Amino acid sequence: MAYPTGNGVEILRSGGIIDATDANTWLEFDGSSASPGDTTGVVPAHHIITILNITIFEASNASRTFDLNIQPGGSGTIRLTRNHPVGAYETFVWNDRLVLTGGDKMYFAGSSSSTFHVWYSYIDQNWSGSN
Image (cartoon, rainbow, N blue to C red; front, side, top):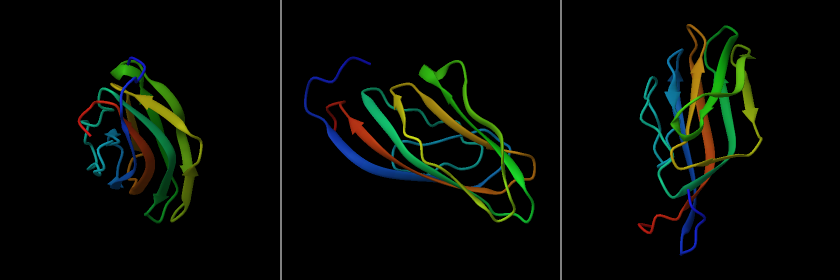
């Protein structure tokens, strides 16, 4: 992505995944929420996404694990965490800031029989000219 030179807008947004399972699920960056197994989420061209936090709750009565990954430019995989444990009815909060640009994808996957609820907040900087 080229450096922004014109006018843009900055919007605080959030999204979620309800009952995320072991299927890879891409996070959406258009203010909507993803369904488990949805693989359509991608950072739009001319957008800069700053992830503020991700809250992950295991809604079943057993400990489970999850993976959180990024595909920069849509290829390759950067593992942020793998098989991270979350106890039954417990919550994990990712508070480190992450920056994604056009073409990047970020996805979540739980372990077998998991029932995760995922909520994330982010800043969307839109430099596309269609604000």
